[in-house]
Image 1 (cartoon, helix red, strand yellow):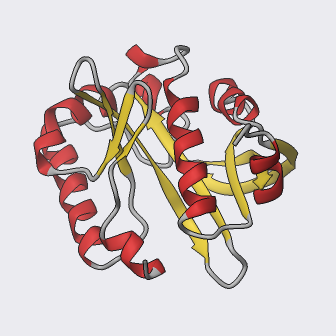
Image 2 (image 1 turned 135 degrees about the vertical axis):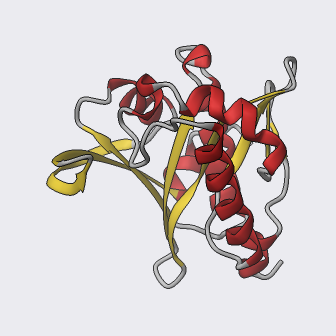
Length: 191
């Protein structure tokens, strides 16, 4: 598979409890349900959605990104409920350096149940096997304990704190940076 085709044709990935699939306009009401919650958007770079129109506008931009073969998220669907509950994806990809950065968000109703770790593991496996990455990294605001816990749970290592790395929502944020290398990822897998 051509690496750029990966971006245009994100495959559906199935885990024990989730489907990671392309996002569509049909996901608007489920996405609005969690994106309108200030607790969910507190540590994201996007603002809380205040209307279903905000969500539809965002979803339309994702659809355009799929067509332009840009980095874009998978939607997370809870298999039993058949409910769209969040997103995860690679937000930056340096093909020259075989490195990518990932990001994610999930409905607060599904916090602390291992869903995001499950999705991130699947995304890392895809990154190392299909995108031929050597390094995957992720960052979170220092106070975002939940996200840091996800990264630690999937075997990523804390590399340090990037002081005042980004300006978001009117303030500079210090970010924790975590990473995992291809060799470390596969060394921790039984297969």
